[in-house]
Amino acid sequence: MLYHLLLFIIFIFKFSKSNKSRICPFYLLSLISTNNLFKMKHFSTLLILILFLNSCKEKTDLCSETQSKIDSLETVSNELNEELKLLKRKMPNVIVQRAEGENCVIDLYTLFGLKILLRHKRPDIEPENFLCVPAAYTTIQKNKIDGLFVEDGVKIIDNINDSLTGACIISNDNIRIISLKDLNNALISEVIKAKKSIFQQILLIKKHHKVKVPLFVKSKDHNYIRRALIQFDDFYCIGQSHRPIKISEFQESLISIGALNAINLDMGTYSEGWYKDTYCKKIIIGEQMINTDKQTNWLIYTKQL
Image 1 (tube, rainbow, N blue to C red):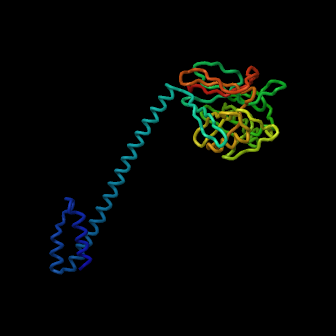
Image 2: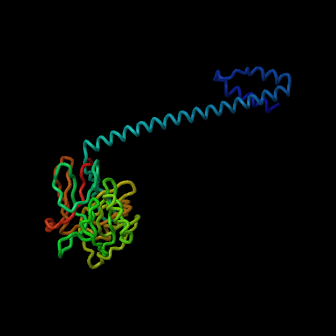
Image 3: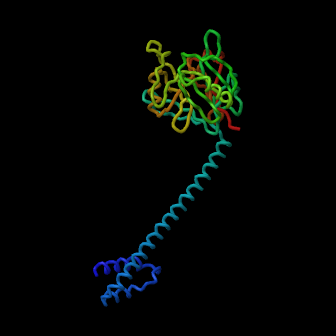
C-alpha cells in the first residue's frame, strides 16, 4: 500500500504542472481508498510505464536540443573558417611574435595566408614575397650548396653530406623534419615524384628532445644569433634568437617554447635575411652580413595562388 501511495505522489509531482497526463489521479485515490489491490497493481504498472516513457521523451528532447546547438556551433565555425580564408587571401602577412624561451627570447615569424618555398636563385623583393632567409649551408671552398638539395622535384645538388644530421622536406603547406638515417633513395625518389623540395642541415630538436650536434662541440659553440625552421604540434614557422646564444642554449630554449622538431638554418656571416612588416616595409634580420652576396639558397614565404 505504501509503495502505491509513493508512486501516486511521484506521479502527481511529475505531472502537476503539465497537461500531458490523461489519467485522473483521483482514480488512484479511489483505488487506494477501496483497497482494490488487483486494480492498484495494474494501475501502478501503467504509471511506471508512463513515467518511463516521459523520461525517455525528455532525454530525446535534450539530445535533440544538444544536437541542434552542436549544428549551430558547426555552422558558426564554418562561417568563421571561410572568413579567415578570405582574410588570408586579402591580407597575407608575416606575423612576428616573441616567445620567452628558457635561455633567450625567440622571435617567431609565422605565415598568415602564405606558403613556404625553397629556392636556389635569389628571390627578388616582389609584391608576392614576404620573407627570405638562407636555408642550407654554403661551402666555403666552392661556394656551393652544402648537402642534398631538391627544388620542386628537381635535383640541384645530388650529394648527401653525412656530417649534416638532418633534412627538411617542404611542400606548399607543410614541412617534415627528419634525421639523416631516414634520408634514403626511396624517400628522395618520393620527394622528386611529388615535386616537393628538400635540403640538408643540422637537426636540433626531434620529438621534443635535443639532438647531439657534432659540428658544434664545446670549443666551437660560440655565441651567435641562431635561427631555425621550427615545427610545433599544429603549425610551423621560422624562429630566431633575439640575442647571440650558444647552440646548446638555443636548443633548450626551443624545447621550452614547445618545439616538436627543429632544424638549423645558415647564420653567421651568411645570415642576412628580410621580411615585410604590416606596412610592407622591408626589415633586415641577421648579423655579420659580410657574405650575403655569397649566399646560395633561401627559404621564402610567398603568397598562395
